[in-house]
Length: 452
Ligand code: NAD
Image 1 (cartoon, rainbow, N blue to C red):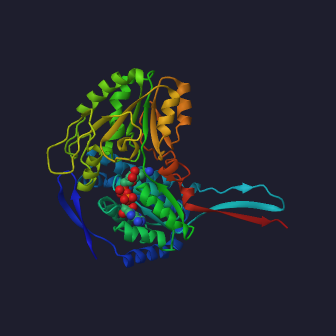
Image 2: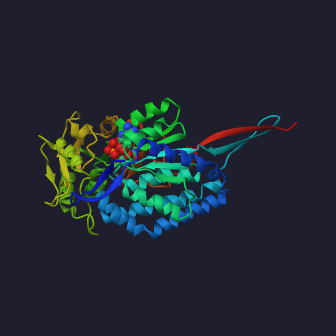
Image 3: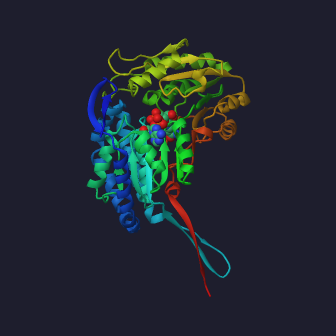
């Protein structure tokens, strides 16, 4: 068995070694999950709800430990990491209500009654990226478990530590062995096996568009269910009638949070030409004031990138590109890149078109509402976005016009577990979270009972 050295991104120092599962070990874990399935699906709804609430309570009791672990493993600011651990707890509590409310329908038909059932799929494979190891894991496993499935979860190679701990906490909370298993391993080994092993009935994947396409193609072979949450290149559209000062002051948080390694990052800012200079003045003030410091410090607003490789990729986008202004970053070991603002009117520029996945934002002026919507939609992605305007009608028109799964008006709302989340176009397939998420982990069965 090989292993992976986990590195602290803020210091570039090793944290620990994590064994990587082999193909045989992945198969064995999947088989154990399959063995655990008949008993788990038969647990009475109220009891499954109680177990999920117990799991949430144990996560809550370990919130600070999980948060500190994420700071060391992923370089997240401690404030964000606490929110992320709390999000796992909240997701578990929210979906703990689902087993008792997994309603079917009674449909009027002639000659008897017709009822539908939401039945669990069996074993669900959840594949998680490194940018939000805890929340993205929870968005998959909480509704999947609630719907009566067993879950095998593969964290990203770079960030396995909190997922491994969550697997242990599930057992501590009384979730039966085999119902929720965390298998650290390579994407090309364990991740691929989720796709090819027929015992896995659904793959819930979050990651790059490139790997997502490959997974979708692989799942086609067995008509395996698949949910994809992929990349983004979201627009933050600022109209002249907006509170421009507020739009400028908040824009950095919408793109530089998690050092820009966020699929929802508003990495393209579109500003109506008449307030372009005013906006840039406010943006510069906000960017230079951003506290890019040790993520373990309570005051930290932005930490390092995840890895040396990611830093190299991000810097590659800045090669030969003139930055309008930048914020600060520690001159330290570790994978630091300062928040960087680029101005462009070239819609073919890589920094405008491609998902940089780092603290780089491109700003472009626009002329009118139609132009803004056209520019926002001129991308293969469609995950998120923001609209700043005081005109309610315009807010509505633009929100309906932008081809994107998650838009916020006069705010940069992050993902909320109460509401559906997912992408248009190449940002994904299917939706996670919200009240309907457990249904995505079920088959709808229709039963007709004759009355004569
Ligand atoms: P990635 O696609 O390289 O890896 C994601 C996960 O897939 C990892 O666990 C990896 O081990 C696994 N994997 C890699 N190759 C695989 C294969 N052939 N078969 C099965 N699994 C495989 O992505 P990443 O670099 O870890 O994450 C960054 C990307 O994730 C960005 O593009 C970002 O936009 C996207 N993302 C999307 C969302 C969303 O909800 N839409 C959320 C977070 C991140």
